[in-house]
Length: 135
Image 1 (cartoon, rainbow, N blue to C red):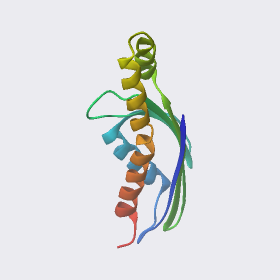
Image 2 (spheres, helix red, strand yellow):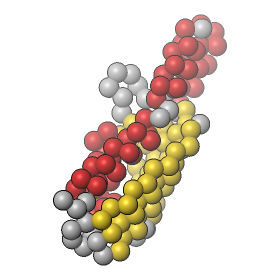
Image 3 (tube, rainbow, N blue to C red):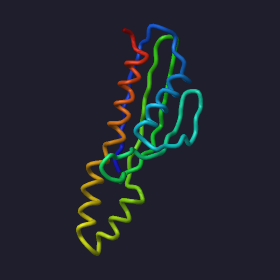
């Protein structure tokens, strides 16, 4: 299991809305991940899902708490979460106990993919700053 935290402060040319920021995050996350929103309030939302992999099936899942604080033209976005092995990892792990090669594949893919959620959220915050930030 890998815990992660990413945050960003954004100052905009115009007044910002936390609803627009949350919608932007969900839209961008939908491009790279399969996820669901477990709960959502004006300032927080809890996301659960997995980052889509182009080469192989995802071996990790994530749960992230997204906190969005907006005041006039300033916003603070903080994302705290954790990534952990999903069911695909455990299937490969159990089969690998008897064959060896699947165990190696499962472990390598898990360690390669465990930081993908953090990297994905960092990219989304960068896009958010580009979209809403001052020019």
